Each structure stands twice: as structure tokens, then as C-alpha cells.
Amino acid sequence: MSIKRFVQLFCFYFLSIVASYSFIIWLDITSFWGTILIMSVIGYIVLTLPLTLLTLKKKKEEKPAK
Image (cartoon, rainbow, N blue to C red; front, side, top):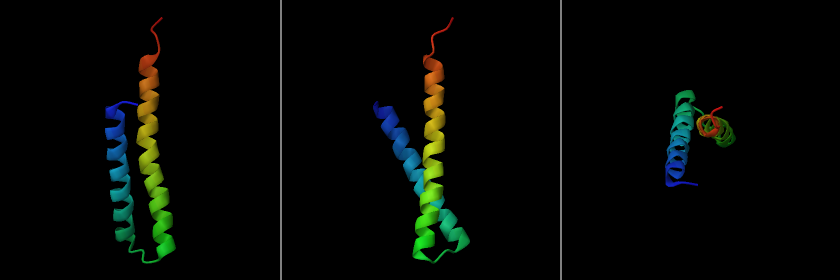
């Protein structure tokens, strides 16, 4: 795994925390379990979607031309 990939992972991890926490504040969720649930779901989506798309893009670029 390259350093570029680790930087991308950190950026998306940070973005997932900021996005999910902002969503919690916006919805004014005060319940502990509600906060955990929202942070888990939103964080997972924000973290995995871009990284999956980047991986698919990388695989597509690696295919040899015919």
C-alpha cells in the first residue's frame, strides 16, 4: 500500500467523521445510541463509497490495452 493510499484513507476517514457529526448536530440527536447508529451508518457510507470508486478506477486503469 502506498503513502498516497494512506493519505486518501485518512482524508476520507476525517470526512466521514465530520459529515456524520454534522448530520447529528443538524438533526439535534441527543440519544447516545442514536448518535452511535448515525455515526456508524453515515461514516461507513462516506468512508467506503469513495474508496471503492477509487479502487475500481485503479483496476480499470491497470487493464492492458488490446
